[in-house]
Image (cartoon, rainbow, N blue to C red; front, side, top):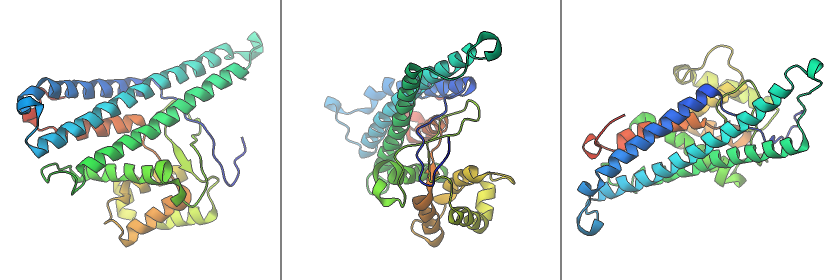
Length: 293
């Protein structure tokens, strides 16, 4: 399929067997942690079910959001398995086309089913980012008591999630190009990611990205940049370091402007599941849980 200057390709790649098992494990671990907290909930609640401690109330609200995030992750897990099944069934039928007389071209019904499945994945991943923003709203200064603290690393990741949500899910009018959905190139089974990018990248985007990478050399190297990384990988690395800079500072504004003009790539559901697990461990003190994962 040829790419035009203003492109929107509605494709997600299904998660592979190994990735699926990993996200299933992460979901199970989060559910166990939530259950442990719920089992001890009655001991942390005042008379008539009223929480007299503001910090405890915020913790419970955060737990509700995490429970809903876990449900979305489970939807993604199931939807990804369906997509993988559709793909593998078609490959199996056409694996020896010269002998069996089959091809890899799907029927109209298969195309419709695949597109419906991919639309589900797109919506679920977007929903994850909206619920992650809910967490930010509960945790950010001024909305919660000071005792609710996240490590700098988790705050950085959560800030990046909110940037993606801001420009590519809710406030679409603030970005500088038209893009309605997402795409991903097929390079083998992996976690689905929303690639909200202007493609092909303009010369100004390539040169701008190169300049930003060079200007933030130490930060991007520490974030995992390697020699030979392509345009997409560099965009992902840039997103990782964005919120290391002070909000509205010079470098923060430069990176933010690049995203607004050229797009971003989401984290995979597996990465978000691992983030959620880490956040849950920080939010719930050991005394509030009967077991740890």
